[in-house]
Length: 307
Image (cartoon, rainbow, N blue to C red; front, side, top):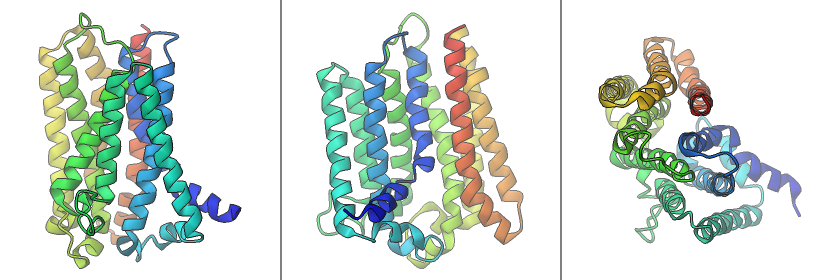
């Protein structure tokens, strides 16, 4: 066993970068959980963890050319022993399948459905299996609509998967309004991801990709991101005006602060004029903000649920 190669593959899963995805799942669960009812969410977390690792590994492989200039080390981590890399990818998929099966066997049909949807779009993001022979060439991330659609569906699916890991109480709040909140929060997070992606605008233009940052360029894509974040914030407070007391509390203390912080960070990034510093902010700061704002929402929802 080439333990060094195996460790490199595990390192390439970029656990720090994928951790915020688990925060979405747990946050959805925080709204509907009952004390002692943990089995479903534990299986869901187990499944999404391996799904995220597979998604990341696949993305590194198909983005070899895109990452060649600024992040060549990512592909090197997976190319030390291709047999081990292939084995790990197969194991990850099998574990995801096992997790989905366990959810179905325990009667958690909706969490299984939404995690399956998340996994499917995450794969399509890097590998379009609907087009045999041109799977990487037509991966959805290279099209602006595919990039937007995958992220929005993926984020929203994780919120719903976590939400249905618990037992929704229909008398406590308006489900439709809550789902709109999930969508608006996801939109604000997409806007931050768009700012982060704009750091690769030059490389994406050279490769003639059809992404938003390749079409609009660094600055205009970032301005679009700010507009989407403002739109999500306006929508959130409009929903709050129609919500009951419980949902208004969640919006005011758990959801709105995260969107406001993302908006302020996006504005700061756009105002930075130094090219070197600008790239650093776009590459590093969004990861910290994703982790921080999602963790804040998660903790606040649990605290409000226990009041």
